[in-house]
Image 1 (cartoon, rainbow, N blue to C red):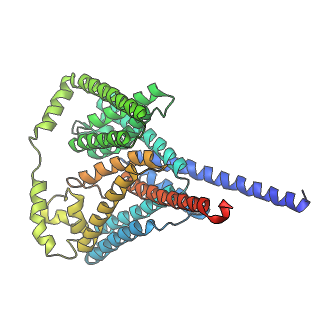
Image 2: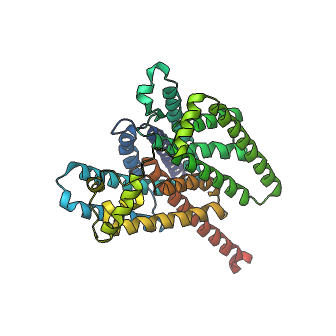
Image 3: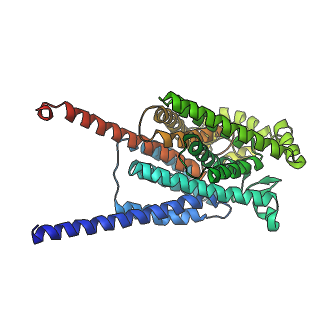
Length: 422
C-alpha cells in the first residue's frame, strides 16, 4: 500500500472513530433525556434542560429527512400556527402565551423523535425502550414509597390518597407507566431477555404503580394496550410453534398478574379505594355537560375561544383533547388534530401488522400511544411529554419501514436485471 493510501485509510479510521464517539455521546444523552421524562413534579423539568443539549447536538451531527415526515410536519405546524392565530387577541396574557410556547416546544420534540428514530432505528428504539422502562421504575418506585409513606414521602408522592409518584397528577403517572409495562411483557413473551426474574419483578413494580394511581383511565388504557400488543404479537407470528409459546407465555403472565391483583385487593384500604373508584359515585359529570354545552358555540367560532380560555367560560378545563383542539386552536387546528390522529392510527396499525424489522418495537409504541389517544376523549393529554415521544416514534418507525421497503425493491430489481443474470 502506498503512503498516500495508508494516510487516507488512517483518516477514514479517525473519521469513523469520531463519528462513533459522537453517536455514542448522542445515545447517552438521549437515554438521559428519556429517563428525565419521569421527573415532572418540578417545572421546568430536567427533561426540558436535557432536550436543550441533545437536540442541538443531534442536529449538528447530521440527519436525513424522509418524505414520510411531510404529513406529520405539515399537520403539526398547521395545528400550532392555528393556535398562535387564536392567541393573537390575548397576546398580553401570560398563561395563554406560555401554553402556546409549550405547544411549540412539543412540536419540536415530536419532529426530533420522528427524525431520530428513522435512522439507526433498531439501536435507537431499543435504547429508548430501555431508558423509558428505567424511568418507569423510578416513577413507580416513588409512587409505592409514597403510598407506604416511607420516610414521610406521602407528602411528595401522594394526592387525595392516590399515588402521583414523580408526577403531579395520578392520571398522568398511571398512563406514563403503560409503555414500560408493555415492553416488559413483550420481553417475557418473546423470550428476549436473559434476566427473566428481574424483568418479571420490574413488570410487577410497574403494575403496582399503575394500580396505586387508582386511575380508571390508566387501568382501561393498560388493559386495551396490553390486549392489543399480545393479540398483535400472536396474529403476526407465522410459526405455529412460536404462536403456541406466545399464547402460553401470555396466559402465564396474565395468571401471575391476576394473582398479584388479588393479593393487593386483600388489603382493606386498597379494596375500599378500588370500590369507591369503580362505583362511579362522586364522578364529576360537569366535564361531560360542559363539553356538550361548548359544541354549539365552537361551531360558531372559527378561531375557538383562544388558548386556555375554555375554563373562563365553563369554570373547568375541557377534559378532552379533542374539544380543546377546537376550543384553543380553532377550526383549522381542530381539524388538523383530528387528521393527525386518524393518520397516526392508520400507519400505526399498518406498522404493527406488516412484516418489517421494526414490527416488534411498533407493537409496543403504538398500543401505548393508542391508549393515550382514546383517553384524550375524556382527559387533556395535549401537553403530556411522553405522548409526543410515542407519536414521533410511530412516524419515525414508519419512515424506517418505507426506507427498508425501498431498499428491498432495489435489491430485487438488481437481482432480476439482465446484467446481473449475465
